[in-house]
Image (cartoon, rainbow, N blue to C red; front, side):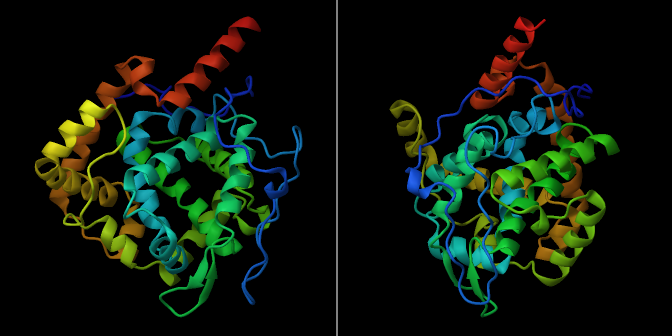
Length: 336
């Protein structure tokens, strides 16, 4: 089993995380959100600009600080992404506007980089939130139910953010350890901080766990469905190009072996996507899951709970998380 340090509770705030490397937006674009289509409500109001007025990222030493940079968190992301696009408006936006089919590796790399900035980016966390709102300002259309949507409509934008908390909370039970009630509350409070970084108003997010679960159940009952993008994400026969990132010799080998490697990788992706999705969400989307699959998932996760905690820091944490954690530890040592 992993140690209690694997999922940590709230701590006193430490030094700032190491700066990220996000792109700088033109000043005229910072914090500027579009007007929504008629009847769609107001977009998230941009946070105040400037150091000291931007929303704070989650604190060093908190639950997200330990959780989101751990390599095991990579196995949690497919479930959260699939739940996001199970919303008809979000699914339609991704179906019509995303490059996930033509550039899946680049899309995944950018999404992971963005997520790491929210938690470990220090002052660049809020800058990344502004960049994302600018990026989504033109995404609009009609969803599968014939309703007009805009990517920045608060209900749609908030759902994309909301999926992270239940997936982290559920998947940590398998991959790391069950959280205590205090850790769950700390995780939710920190996830609210991430929402503010993304430009979501407090009024558009449930402010407590007690408010979150009725909202969650209502969304599962009334909105969530197996959209076109959901079906593609769990389809083991969906074509995926070979990786186009990394050293060219490795890319060449993967390209040559891709016809052999893709089928088992696609099956594994489907397995962890469905398996690490909260059961009530899995049922709402209509994704099958058997008792035998549950046993296989528990066996795999039991191995990871033993192996990952004993890995050196450079192998256990993603690069940005590792750099931020090292900077914070060094600052703590300097401050005694």
